Length: 110
Image (tube, rainbow, N blue to C red; front, side, top):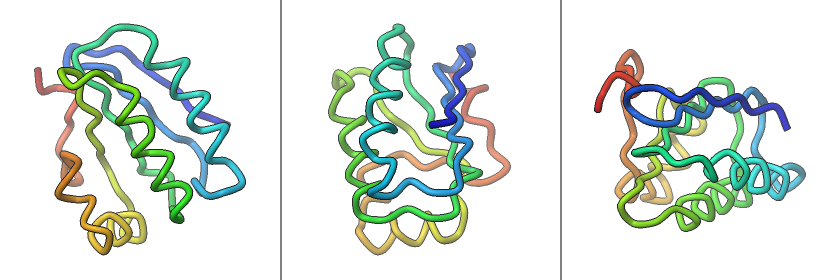
């Protein structure tokens, strides 16, 4: 699973460099995220700009990562591609997560 992270002033930015988060990679995604979020930060910003497909297993994996974090350490999403944004909207998970619009750089926000 190709995931890179960078500690910024605004929090831990995690970039998923995979075209899909689906049933085939959901467990590896959660395991890798568990490793990355072990380092303390204010919040975790998940950059999904390279993810073109997210199925229910992938959505469940993202929710599981959110639940791994303490309540005072939010998981925020950024740079959702249109198909991924549609999944979050149709499942109403866009009301659960803070989703930063394209062009906004959440890493700059403190």
